[in-house]
Image 1 (spheres, rainbow, N blue to C red):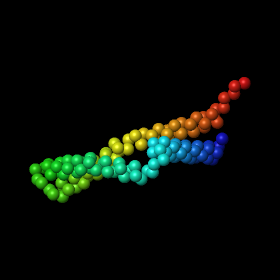
Image 2: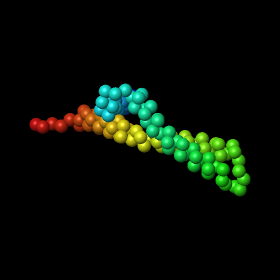
Image 3: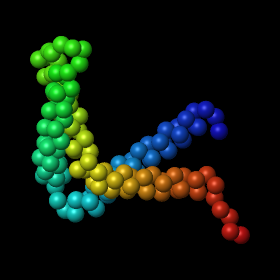
Length: 128
């Protein structure tokens, strides 16, 4: 096998792996949502993440107002925004952890199936 054949084979295999991961992720999403739409689920998660965002904004503003002996309103606002963004992100991640686990698990199972098929193509078993 020369380099061109090997690289084409590797690219095809990589493409099959990506396709199987995407298909597996879709299967995991469908299993978790059970015929519900994704947008309402995510908007509900965003509503639940507002609490941690408020706490993060408060803690960020509080932390930004202390330090270096001088108080800066701009610094407190910037830290408050950063804390709010971190809190919102953490709230979303926490609220969607089961959904993410379902999607990742299904994608990984699909990738492993494709890897096994590829291995059997390269290493056929002769039962004779």
